[in-house]
Length: 291
Ligand SMILES: Nc1ncnc2c1ncn2[C@@H]1O[C@H](COP(=O)(O)OP(=O)(O)O)[C@@H](O)[C@H]1O
Ligand SMILES: [Mg+2]
Image 1 (cartoon, protein in one colour):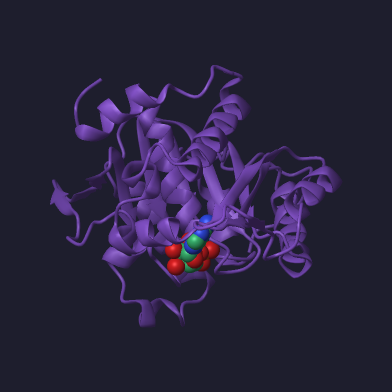
Image 2 (cartoon, rainbow, N blue to C red):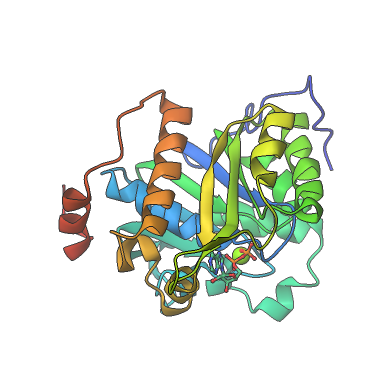
C-alpha cells in the first residue's frame, strides 16, 4: 500500500481524475456497521437532489451493499458502449457493488481486488456531470477507504455515528485516518439520536445524549445534526422509498434536509435556507422532471 501520510500528495492528485464531471465527491463513513451509514447516505443524496443539484450515489460498501434496496432499485444497470449507465431512482443516479458481485464473494477479497473493483465503479460508469457524488463506504478503516483517497480527489468525509461511547471511540479512529491522508472532515451526523414516542411524544435518549456533538467538538469538526430513531426511517429503507420522499413533511425528513444544507454550505460556502416544503413536494411528484 502506498505511503499516504500527511505531508504527502493531496488525495487523488497526480493521477488522472476518473470522474472529471463531478464537482464534489463526498465519502460517507462510519466507525462501525449498523449505525445507519447507508440510511443517511440515501436520505442525504435525495435531500441534495431536492435542492435542484445533480446527485450520484456510489455504493462502495463491498461487504454490505444495501443501497439498491434502500433506493428501490432491483434491476442491474444497463451497458452502453462498453460502459455502465447508472440506475436512477428518486432523482439520484446510483451504482452499487451489489449489482456485480455476490456478497459472499466480496467477503474474502484482499486489498488489490477491492482497489480494482472500486476503480471500476468510477472509471467504467457513465457518471457524467454531477454536482455531488456521495460514496457509501464500508465501515471502518480498511482497503476501500485507502483506495478511495488514492483514486479520486475527495472533497471531504462525513461520518455517521450513534451517540454512545463505544461507537464514538471508533469514529475518532476513522476520522483520524481521513485527517492523515489530507481529506477534509465535513462533519459528524448523529443517527438514532433519540426516540420520540408516537403515543405520548416523550423523548427517550436510547443510546445516551450528545455524544456526536462532543466528539465533533473534541475533533474540531462541524456537528451536522441529529436524526431520531424512528420506525418510519427503517421502513423507508426496507421499502425502497427513503423517508425524505415517503414523508417529506416529517421532522425526521427535515433533519436530513438540514444536514444536507450544512453539507452544501460546508463545500460551497452557500448558506441559503432549507427549501420550503411546497417546492419539495412538487418535485417529489415527478422526481425525474427536468428543473
Ligand atoms: N434513524 C433511524 N431510525 C430507525 N431505523 C434506522 C435509523 N437509521 C438506520 N436504521 C435502520 O438500522 C439498520 C441499519 O442501518 P444501515 O443504514 O443499514 O446501517 P449501516 O449502513 O451503517 O450498516 C437498517 O435496518 C436501517 O433501516
Ligand atoms: Mg450500509
